[in-house]
Image (tube, rainbow, N blue to C red; front, side, top):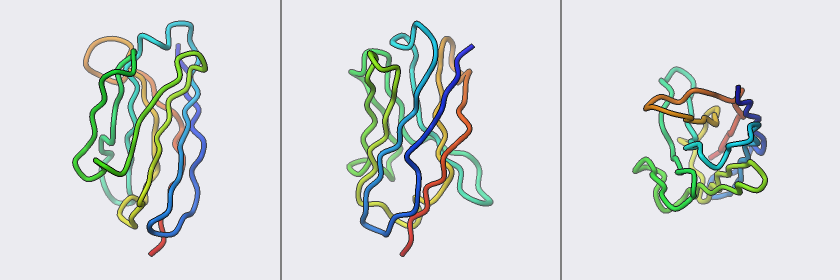
Amino acid sequence: QVQLVESGGGLVQAGGSLRLSCAASGRTFSTYTMAWFRQAPGKEREFVANIRGSGSITYYRDSVKGRFTISRDNAKNTVYLQMNSLKPEDTAVYYCAARVGGDAYDYWGQGTQVTVSS
């Protein structure tokens, strides 16, 4: 069982920055693919970014490329999402997820709210 706890959300003006953190339990964190998803009110949850266990491979949705950076510290069992140049359309609940094996994300955090005001 892997537990994920997100933090770092909040209210920020457009153009501002936030850094989300996700602390994970488990002794094999460095083998998990970690990801961030988000869900805006009335919309389906969508993929934001992911990072392989070694940290060497990352993927982003097109709308956040160049603005968001995903990273991880395997010594701290933590994954981060640095969000710069935030836009009102980035407003959502952001979820951390872990993929332990296979194609699906097996574990999810409780989410953290990010609100970007115009």
